[in-house]
Image: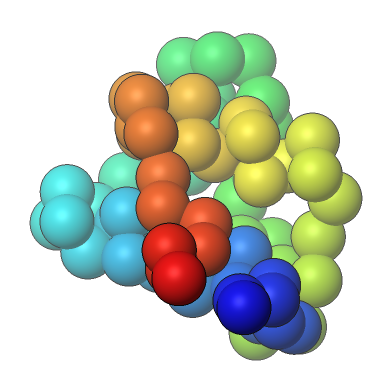
Length: 75
């Protein structure tokens, strides 16, 4: 049985950024294209804190054009 752990959302976003070779500045630009205003420093703060809203998580996935994510291992 698999469970979602603290920090999984951050790990998912960081992995998607790495797959796309996207820096914080690149994510800021991608979010801005969707009219979501963040700064490099505000992103770094959110990622280091490791907690953010589901809305922010989904906005980041959409900005990176992620179409699917793997949430849990199958048993």
